[in-house]
Length: 300
Image 1 (tube, rainbow, N blue to C red):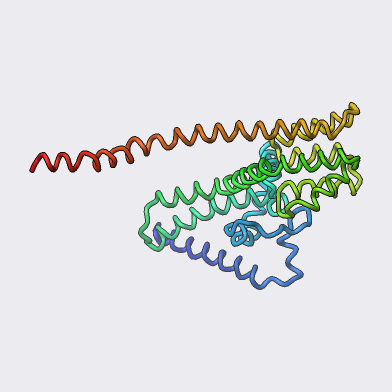
Image 2 (cartoon, rainbow, N blue to C red; image 1 turned 180 degrees about the horizontal axis):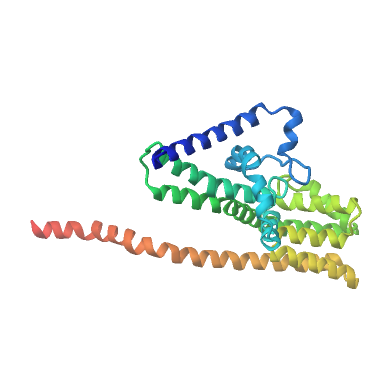
């Protein structure tokens, strides 16, 4: 009868063999097999900004994607993950099944493999490392999405006043609103978040969506109060017949005031943050420099 250590060793070898097989399958796959890496929607994901996602995506598709599709079908949870991916701007490089697949791979399979290596091959590392790896792996997809969402927020807040000013000038010159958006997109930074979002608005309108629906979709993708306020004001101005240029000018003034308030709050928070190192690090050093010669001189 097999001992416990022998069972763990055999399990570790089997898991290692499965991992090698999956990796070799990915490397040797022909172009005809590349459809296996496509999403359920049939569109292949673009390259991610995360090296972890790019390097582990083949293992997710070969090992854990089927479990994500089969066992994690809670509509409420999947809707929440879908919204997180959408607002992070990652809908072209990550989908719900992949998100869950990465959680399973990094949060379950990887700690299990480490445990098998620890007890089967007698590798000397604490169990706390295994638990830490599992916790990090499970939260990493959400952390990456939230990090990208915060990055998008900072970019949009800094770009929005310029966009509103340019739209106000263009509409004041009797340019139609969608043409004004097109002109601003042509002049703005092509890599900017707002440039891409307004470009998608133009694309959706050209495909048959209404202007209002395209603006609401942009507000949903960004999920920011500033953008929601902007789109609501623009839609209401068209509905009521108000001057769009006047509304945009007022919106631009309001945005600049809000940015000034945010800067004041950030400055106040910075003064509070620096208080601790000033009291416990800088002031003692100053006292030492001032009083040390006096104390040493008195002792002599």
